[in-house]
Length: 421
Ligand code: ADE
View 1 (cartoon, rainbow, N blue to C red):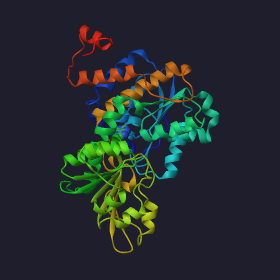
View 2: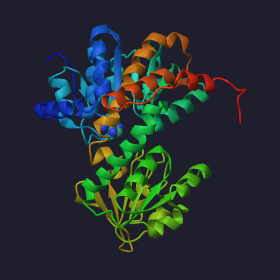
View 3: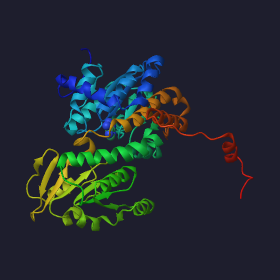
View 4: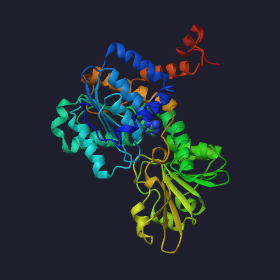
């Protein structure tokens, strides 16, 4: 085979293919886009580098971009999220160069990003903005070749907006996360289900009757809190934003400062995008045996270095993805998935049905960027609202759900201001 790649084991490809096909059954919107892309070839000749979680859902996106004419390289956007069989199938069956190995160390992770940049992309596709960040830091000479980028996640969008605010961003980026058909569904229902899935697969504990502390109340945390409640857990939410805290209270959750929640929780889940939201002074007062994990993009939310410094010896791996830290006073804290996003580390990420909408946005974002970059400046943009709405329409249709349309009388009423009481 003529392509280069770095994956765990090419012989895993057959199992990977089944997984990709299984996910495809739940991705009808992406399938429609793929059929159109096959005919229209909207990305013909575009070199693309995608830094995404290498999952069966991502494989369906990669195939869609390839069939649309893109010359694509895929690399991991997290050291622990790769599905090695899927990576093998993309290489062996689709001849897409993939650089991703589950459990790769940080050095290999960045070598893989270098491989994505060595592809000399015209369009970047990121989940967390590592590709764009490395490109700007070490490969500024490649910027003239870049048409633009797309970004999948809240954390990446925050980073990119920080770059744009400083004037550091040198090409336009479409924030897929800002689409309603992305964050209202992927972040909430996707993260809600897959995070609980990751915690349960890693620990096999019963959630009913436990106290689950959810740190943050953005869209991801809302999903986690809602699903933990559904399992019968008593859910406490911690927040720094008064409006979000108020929503959590009115959604029926107990809200309190993290220092108070720390003494009460059995399981702690962070999804804030910020650093050390589970810090040493919190872990110091937690119950013996407390479980802590993170579902935010980066592994910065739990202060693991600080925890290690409070412990005697290295942690013990007591089950796959469960490390037991023993403090000098004998208290044990269980950290799941090395503090990396637990839904992709210990489970398989969001189910295909929500990734269908997220990746429909990604595919349309790549096409939109290719066709419209000239009208964009070096800022972070949402996708046009009509594309977002079209994805919602297609998803509803695929689910067999019909909705009403306004009558002429109703449409007229909404466009006038004279008629009141
Ligand atoms: N992010 C969260 N879940 C995912 C999945 N299944 N595939 C790709 N990226 C994801």
